[in-house]
Image (cartoon, rainbow, N blue to C red; front, side, top):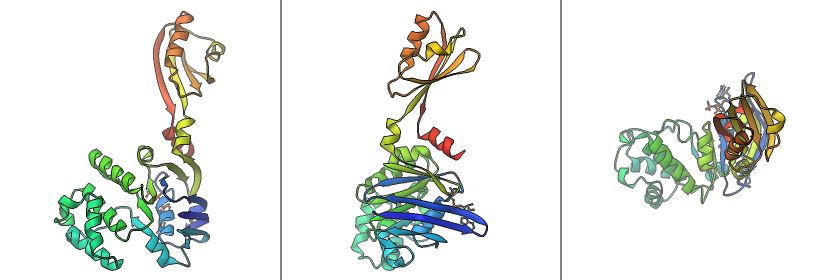
Length: 297
Ligand SMILES: Nc1ncnc2c1ncn2[C@@H]1O[C@H](COP(=O)(O)OP(=O)(O)OP(=O)(O)O)[C@@H](O)[C@H]1O
């Protein structure tokens, strides 16, 4: 296992930021750590990076205990903190050289990392002159310099414009081919775009831990349909793969199916066969977004 967290709790004064949190991450996984503001994502990440000490429980990175083998843990981890603090007056290369010194990394690594993170054309500039997207690349480059096995990225795309966002997600996915990544976010689409697995945290507790493939497979489909007249729910229940029918007011019905096949044509044909007119028909998917809302609202 690259990361193992067992029964971690952490309080700040009276406030419990993490309550008995456990999960593990295998080598090579890209895991999204998803939760609303204040859920405990950064706190968990800071415990893994040894910046915070937990009140109870245990955590290991690459088999090294965060309490008893701090330095080994730090060597195993590349960390991009929230808000990516950088020295804006430093040149990109100068900043990476400074980090290489701190980590006692050979200077040759700098050019390799600059290329890997797509910084080559901007490498001669001062960090303060770079766009936010390129500043994130510098943060990622610094986190990767010592070639860690595990990357911990705290909200790596916050504040980026849509193009930069796509670029940085692409880069993270690319890096994820060789590293284990734990990435925090409150954007569900980000998890869908980048991750193999999602761990949802709410109020300091893990409320879901699922593989993205699993989520896609169990996708439920809800069709909202409005007819021009009342229909017996019993009749709608006879449609194939129906799990639930609900009248949501007037002649509007919500029909839930447990199939990924688009059931709109079947509902349309149903109306025709029963001499009803379809006034409106729309399909909603029970995807990660609804799971997140259900578990965290
Ligand atoms: N150093 C601290 N001192 C006091 N309280 C803290 C400290 N760090 C975190 N907290 C509290 O712990 C809780 C969890 O915060 P945390 O920053 O881990 O959440 P988060 O999920 O990362 O949120 P966000 O998405 O807003 O960054 C919050 O209520 C926060 O106020």
